[in-house]
Length: 94
Image (cartoon, rainbow, N blue to C red):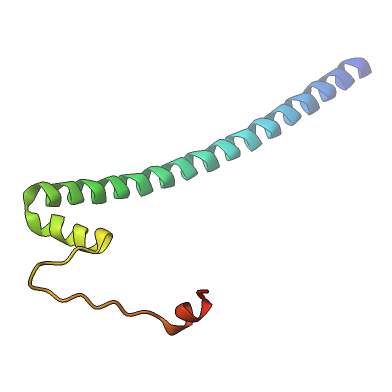
């Protein structure tokens, strides 16, 4: 009888150890799932912004002109270009 109780106690402890280990794993998986959901939301927002930009570029020249101005520094024929230089930058040059 005493041996049977000892065996049952050992089995109960083993089951508890396994249960707590699996609960820790479930917690880690939930954390990973939440991280993936957050990353997917961020990427979805980025894709929406890129899709809107593609639509703008396909839709007209205004968006294309705006992008050329901001990224390439292009100007129109009737515009004047002014370059403002920080004097501290000039002092550092040899």
